[in-house]
Amino acid sequence: MNTLAARITHKEQVEPLHLLRCAVGTQSMTMLSLQIEPTLNVGMHVILSVKSTDIMLSRHGDVSLSVGNRLQARVTGVRNGTLLSSITLDVEGMALESIMTLQASLQLELHVNDAVTVLIKESDIALC
Image (cartoon, rainbow, N blue to C red; front, side):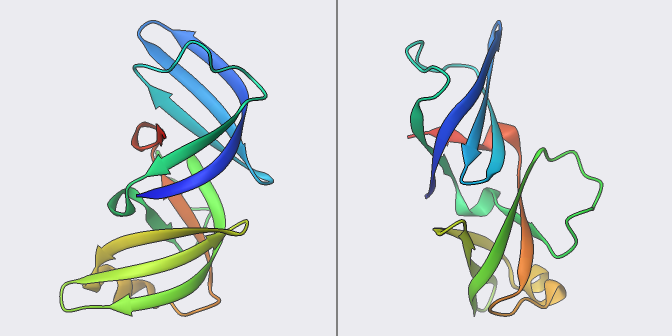
């Protein structure tokens, strides 16, 4: 499981949904959830988590997709296996791992130090 240190910048509730916007370093992420602790408030520090298989990558950040979270990152490692690839990333000094098919990794032609955009759906983020 990947984790990111964040600070809540916005909190909104429309039953039964909760929306949290968080600062991750100088970047922003949005989390959508059915339940959050009522004690969470703007300004609080939280840890966001996301599964490695829920992290998508793009070499072209301006792609039109229905994915709201787009973080700029740098590739720190590429490990291609027989079926899957593990791509390690640096987002503002925090390490993430994206697991994808080998075919997707080869198609992206990722190399260490490449700049990429990390794409994560709002509903794929959880609080630790």
